[in-house]
Amino acid sequence: MHSADLPTLRERVRAHMNDTLVADFQRDGAVCVRQFFTPDEVALLARGIEANLAAPSPRAMVASGPDDPGRFFEDFCNWRDIAEYERFIFNTPLAALAQGLMQSQTVRLYHDHLLVKEPGTRQKTPWHQDQPYYNVEGWQNVSFWIPVDPVSRASTLEFVAGSHQGPWLMPRTFMTQQAKWFPEGSLADLPDIERHREDFPILGWDLQPGDLVCFHMLSLHASAGVDGAHRRRVFSVRFLGDDMTHAPRPWVTSPPFPGLADELPAGHAMDHPLFPLMAV
Image (tube, rainbow, N blue to C red):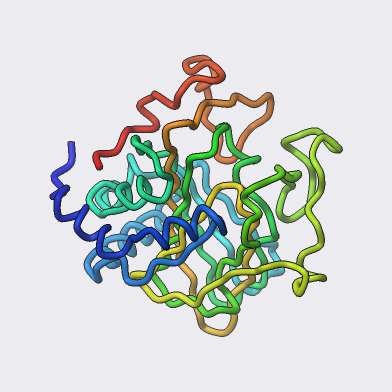
């Protein structure tokens, strides 16, 4: 299906990944890999992001208020419609990196997610775990957070090291803090991390184009807004490993996969054209 030179991609992964990186990911739930992508790959992804911004999908949303001097834009599940996204996902070493970090034999694409904070955006991304918003269960997973602009330490994605070990915590809407997914009281609420930052092992990295952050879907994470004239365009790609299974929910997940529950029973592997197996 894709023409990437797999031996060359594997060589690139071996140049960046070692036992220490894998152990850090398994222990902390988040790691940074420096200069993993070539300038051409970053440029390809930036073109895809601009195409996405010019023609958002029906799943797109603005996650900042009308009084925000900037704008926080999100969109999901566009790799089949934006050629640059498809080339970036399938023709870079992402899948091989995912395989090593997840310690999985198989690698399945879950979905892509665009997150753009325009200059001056005040809207924060509050502390949360991703997996409770999703329709999957299991341990072997990884998300990649890939900026095409420089990201300062103040505006980067932060993590509570080790929080991916659990428990699951209540997912809420970011702007109104409503429990739209799991029923109120069914999961514990998040601790007030911002008011007690000194009590938590918080990780975060300043980033340059070519860098990426890798994290587990249960890792607690958050980010601030962006200041001044800085723009923060980030593309996130999520992958599933051997033990991940479908977990249909009685509510709309984020992102939604309409009709999937009729085609893929609960507890089954995510064996569906929406989630292709990756060549590694």
